[in-house]
Picture 1 (cartoon, one colour):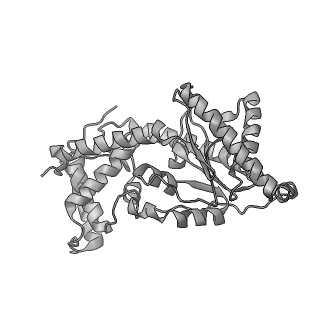
Picture 2: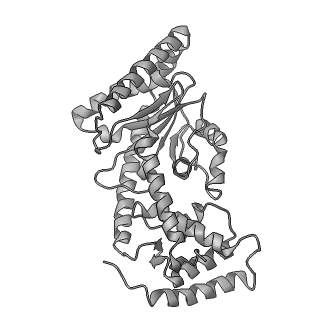
Picture 3: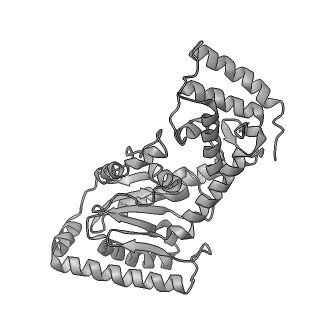
Amino acid sequence: MATNQLVAPLSLYSYRSLIIQAHYGNQKPSKKTAMPEIKEDILATLAYFDIFDYPLSSVEIYSFLRNGYDQYNFDQTLVMLIVQGAVYQFDQWYSLKNDYSLVPRRQKGNEKAAELIDVGKKVSDFLIQFPYVRGIAISGSLSKNYADEKSDIDLFIITARNRLWIARTLMHIFKKLTFLVNKQDYFCMNYYIDEQQLEILEKTTYTAIEIVTLITLHGAPAFEQFGAANTWTADYLPNKTIDLSQAKAVKNSLLKTLFEKAFNNAAGNAIDNALMKITAGRWRKKTALKKLNAKGSVMGMDANKHYAKPDPKNFQHKLLKQYDHKVADLLQDPKSSLAH
């Protein structure tokens, strides 16, 4: 149920102003951190997650800002936006919507996410043993610490160079078996890249957020290289980088080692190329026939020798368009004081 924010922001402003004054003394905002720009960045950050009805903490807002600011200016501006009625605060959460029901929704989603992340860790322990797999991370909404009853465990996988399609084929043969026990949602291996081409080609707000929020489970060295190949994310999110603290070391089994030795040759190259052509061809037919996945979206894959991923036209482009429109509307909203 929505709560009235008319009185709360005023008392909040007084309280937080005292805290800020006590912490920073008479420090003045630096000239290079213009308040209007900070306002725009805070609102733009909240606008992105508002699409998913997901309120943020102040720490989260700061970490997803499009530019770097000192803490003093950030704290002052956030309070100012609350007083102006452009942002609403519920406990430690902030939102563009005056709707308290988003708080229990988030809390329930966080609890469900914790359960699925634990399952994802066990799934990763198993999948890392497949040939040519060098790193596994959780992606999607689960990597943002949110899940509901319909959520999958989306996995981001790094493979050895020029062996992506052998690895992917073996893993998806196994996935077919999971349908027999109704566990397919635990094995949504929908994004593959190999060590030959670690740089993500689509450089957008969406892909930057997806990269820095990955929950790395196995293969810290592979994800260190991945991060180094995608330093461009700092242009979108200068305050956040990939967290490698949870990534376990990859310990190859004897079977995995022997399999890779058997296919690290010209025959392995030919097999990988053939599997790429066969799989990409099958997906093109699915897209042409407008077949739908379990979520009701047209099935589509963007693929080449070094990556296999969902076609960005099916979700990413639509989301970014919605986000751009939302930010544009905020800039025209008199409450934000950004239109002046």
